[in-house]
Image (cartoon, rainbow, N blue to C red; front, side):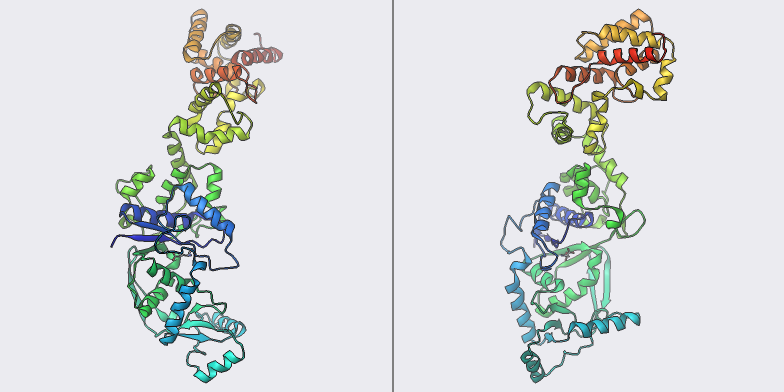
Length: 500
Ligand code: GLU
């Protein structure tokens, strides 16, 4: 039978990186095997599930590039795909188990159960339901019902060891004494996670249940249910946890680890996808930068690591940078645009002239940004010039031989001169070079000071045309031409007592 896997989040908050990785592994596994990926919403927690979470979850997954074959919005043959729409199914299943004597109503009240739980905790033991209601007579049950006590329903467990072969961890054995007669349906008739998940996974024909290690202790309970229903079991696989840099489970303690937070920070969806796929899985050729299609082709469960993966944001940033560099320039510009719009550097609507200039600006910075949100700060040198901000490195240049002459020559010669192409700029530089007989750093360092207040940055032959074209355009932000910058530098130096 072809592979069918599912991602089954509870819409109770923001989708965090750990969950997203589970979705990604399932998605890659399905695509690699030519199978189906199903999205199911486990929204039975009425207090914590919200429609807003559902909406965000769906848009987060879409943003990431995950396309489900069945589930909310797309439908499918095994729906509904929201657990709150499946209560009638759970009810039938409960009735069957009760009828067969495999489950029983429990009338114990919360207070007495809490007391037992507390006692167990004090003794350092696991709480196990003592079976108070397990063997009530029909008469006793009737009395409870007559007293209007609403029961929850528990599964009748025969003590034994449950073993299964985990696709990732190998043989796992857990004794039922760890949990005892657990609840499958609550007093309000809502199913518990373990009950609903088995029924849904079976009816949705899930072949492989792949999820985080935090669910390992639930799996024996689910296996017992499969056996009680007489249902064929899926394969199970549990991914190791993701740890924060301090080796504790990745959580809010490590900052906002939601997918939304990383999107807002300026990560590309394909880079986040790539980086998350490498948290616990490694490429057969140890490649680190992979497109989603490549990941689909190369993914396999046997390269999933059994030990925990450690989240390292710097690694994520490195991967993001590589993905940004490999973007087609138009694509990069499209993604960078909102950041410039927000800072009111470019207008929302613009003509071809601005578009051509904007592409050049993007070319200038594409290799320099790590996060998309860096685009504005990385282009600062195009928009800002302040001779008084020249740092010590730049100040040292002012003492170099012929420096002041080069600065003055640039100011004079660039006035009213077309410097909107690389060639025209180089022509001017050659003129200065030949007239003043200066070359190398004695020429280039002072030239940089004329245009930029920082000694590092993009090469001048590509920076100057971007500044010059920008200065000629009608932009919300006014760009100062390199000639005006150079004159401001000259005046500034004169004020400072330089003989220029
Ligand atoms: N709703 C569960 C969760 O979000 C699903 C676990 C599972 O995949 O079985 O953790």
